[in-house]
Image 1 (spheres, helix red, strand yellow):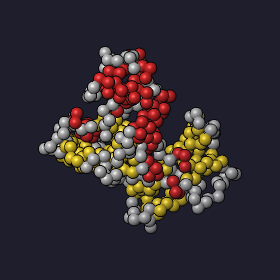
Image 2 (image 1 turned 90 degrees about the vertical axis):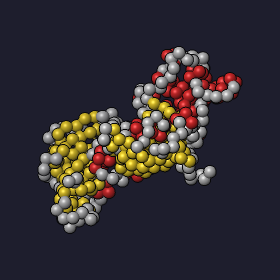
Image 3 (image 1 turned 135 degrees about the horizontal axis):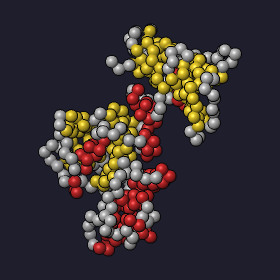
Image 4 (image 1 turned 60 degrees about the vertical axis):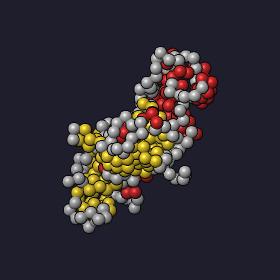
Length: 361
């Protein structure tokens, strides 16, 4: 098989319920050893897409391929148990009456000795061999998650589908369990499709992110590219807090209190949103009524008044009200920065960190 042949490929999947398109023309390719995150808000169609790939939900149209071979269309269908696809969910779904060993070995075929060997191998990999004869109720949440991972890996699936598998874990455990899981899956050369609504999780785990909204994949690419080159205002806001300044375009330039921003190809008179993240706001104290000198990178300083400031642990969040139109702008500052309400300051924003989007009609 060609090394570039996708381990999993879905083409133009569609699924509707009561006339509403829940999954609308979704296509994806995942290579062996690649982790792709299907990221989006609740109700956008992520889990339905996963269920169709697993074979527990039938698509209305479109095809599913594994290693270049068709496994499902609207006529032909390989049963779920023969698709060589592993599943992990938020609910670990361990059998309480079975031992850890029996949970991991559930569904394995072969001799008793070969099954036991595989179970022991996986429990060593997830550092739980000492619990081999224990029961799920004797384990912590993180340990149960690792048992669920071992069980999903036991039949050596070529593809792993993961639906919010870490959301039930304590924050202190989550990062370590995620990293450990990712390492094992990559060692197995498994193609992984992870469904999550948490941008931080997608950025941490994914080789590629597919951002989903209203049943469609609206943007797809490496985490860095999806974060730094968002397709629209909603994409910026999904990954982080965002400030928005509205302006009108004249001569391919959007005119704001922060200076002029390039808006190539946007017709005159069109309203646009200038979108920028709080960490890209520069703050200067009022200097005898004069702001700092403008720079090519930062544009024109705009006068603002502090509304409130909060310390967030490793940074401070300061909320400003802009003098020119009353717009609220948030800025984050490393460490402790707690100016009092009413303090006058001057704000600039880095042009190269701003996004210009036409306002939706």
